[in-house]
Length: 105
Image 1 (spheres, helix red, strand yellow):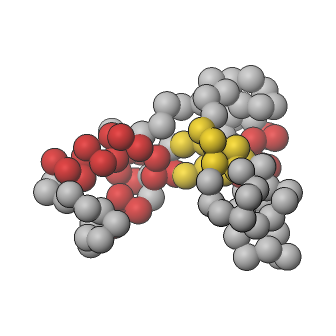
Image 2: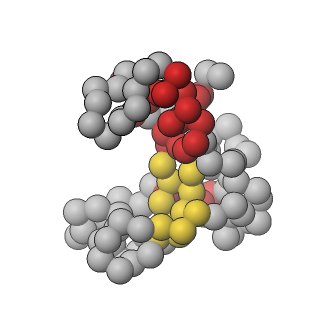
């Protein structure tokens, strides 16, 4: 992985950082195929059906590199250890809204 890129290759970097001025979010833009969720370190192929669904992927569609394992379960486990049982309804620590909670572990 290049020091300049956070992602496995230039194509993935370009794909997950696409900035479209015609659509309000990545799920409504037909040019965005992959979404990346930093707090979960998770990649997925967007299902363009009008919603925000995506199918998790484990390998880069362009370079074939193995992508990191999703940290979604670890995110919920870490918050539960801190006493948060419903993060969508509770005021969770700010670092859990980004990749900060796992970046330095």
